[in-house]
Length: 441
Image (cartoon, rainbow, N blue to C red; front, side, top):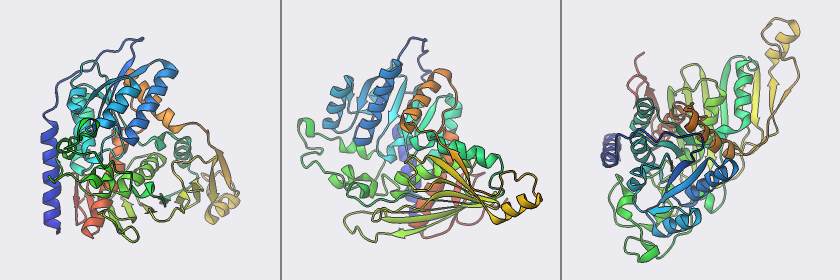
């Protein structure tokens, strides 16, 4: 489609999503939790990821006796029943029934991407706190609505990129704030895969569908929601990340785990000024719309850039690091942003070494040798879940709050649109819009 059609389609999709979600319950205030009350959790979307996230909340409940899963929901009867039996919870096919329950304090949103914002918005309007799987949402308009709704409702929203709870990003933030790198110039990272599941070709259940009986029944109309209407397509349901209507592919599934931690490292989450993206379907020629190889570069107004690369057909990463004028900070030498690295390494640049030797730069106090910064090893997922549960009680701001997530989301959504339009794009922060010419200051 051309640019005009693309913009029209994106706008219509966002408007339809908003209208559909508006049918949900509104005006809730949230239950007042006593010190001994358990936080009641509703899980919306219990496919592979949602079922796993539910298990992590179940573990948290057993550790501290502070939460329990009371409701689960999925449009696929088989998944709904499996989760309801596993977590001894009420099961629903319609997510609005979960949100309508007055005893539900918080919901986990683990649906396909195009449903994240509608459900999260409706949940907050109904007085629920929200743990929303990455990406935070599907469109730029949804980013703005989520930011505004968190402010208006004062609900706790944690975006489920558990990577951001890893110790290395917070240690990196301190190192940069301490002046280890001097002027920050360039951040780089990658997220590569080379496997059947890595390319999102998950197993298709042959008997599932809108005409299925019993556990094979699937509410296809509900699943589509505001997306383009079409006949049931099993590939789209079970492998939704291969299609633009429901996902941004590599950008939203993988790069969110890189861009969000980078925004924490930088110390000040930032919207990009300019984004350009490329790639293509180079290997996997089967039914798909999103590229199997993808890369982008984002420039920020404060004078630094971000470069990310990924392929679903090659598993070799590049180191995750941030370059400065006086030093380079390596956060993950092996490049796996979701993997543990025992330490950060700060490598001084020549100018830093020379200035230190000559005492020209008194602020540069880190010497002429590499500096190793130990990183604490713990389960980032466990820490992320515990942080959300704690914030529900304290009303504090969670680790991956809506403001940081918004900066990451705008970057990766712009990358998707840059690839699809074949154009360099800019972000007008005042209008909160993607534009094709640099915005007037």
